[in-house]
Image (cartoon, rainbow, N blue to C red; front, top):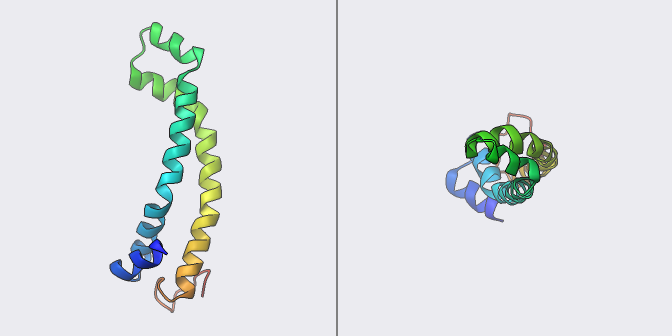
Length: 106
């Protein structure tokens, strides 16, 4: 419902569709990635990296990010299916990109 309202306000178009999908789905990414990063941050190898003198940014970049990356890729793969469905719904109610462009909902 919020996506339909957002597209109605922004107007139909590719950028509006992308904005609507991002506004709707960013919370799932934030919750899952934050939980996974906090879980990885409590591991012993992160503590040993900090004891060894690595900065917080360096620890995040070299220790936490490589372990969170598979979760990000899996979540992105699942969310792409949801994004296609949202675009199809918006196209079905004629709030997607122009009618002469092929879409999933047209």
